[in-house]
Image (cartoon, rainbow, N blue to C red; front, side, top):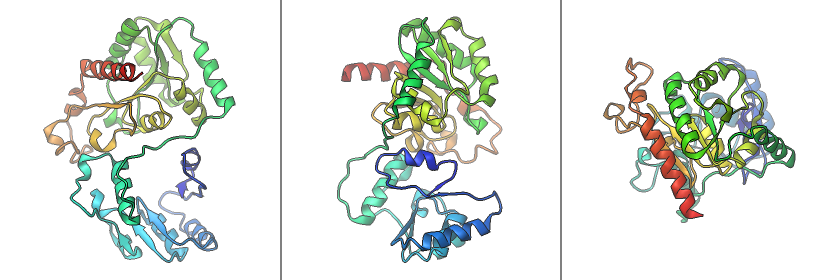
Length: 321
């Protein structure tokens, strides 16, 4: 099950047989929750597993009368409220395990393997299914529209919905200038239309504007995934783009401010992270960034750190080839 705005993403994941979307209005929509629960009841599911057992998802499973329900909340650092009474089991790790020292996706896989008795330990990062030919063709046509840059194709995501995760545009401009000078890189600017102002600020600081390929607002999700298949690297702030690119098989460098890359870094062989890892964040997990008046965790990430991380990842990729 997935929220309506993420259902089409779940459908693109390898190993997923079926996706049931759900939708409701914020702070309401309880009737819709009840109706979907009764629809689920007709399908006679044997078990309902909640990775993030929020109120409405919990109630859906209860209305569906699933014979066995499982959550995985307490062991991942959160606390269930009244929802705990609607689950038969809240999973816990069978051996010492600090979720702050592992990717969240690794922790999820470990929990599920322990639950079903699977002894395998190898981690399998999420993968997206192959893109449709029409989406791949569209992506290739976009890339051909810039004939100035002859080197690496590098895409960027500059903005998130959480401004505390963003990195200064002038620093992004410096990194872009470096990538053009060293790699003759094509600078592919991604994003939705409302992010154009941020993108333009980055472009204004560039020395080689003819190396820019602006695809802001020109790709839907499937086309963006197809584009990632053809890129050499994605440089992004801590947002969904990092995970999308990695699942599409694209190398990714993610800039972290208050979040911990140990937990939230994109899963993949060629995924790297840049973080100041300040001690005030509580061993890499920010205690409360909303109430923090400082920007130390943003300022701690320097241009040199980002450039060095990109160089190291590209060197690793080159050696592996």
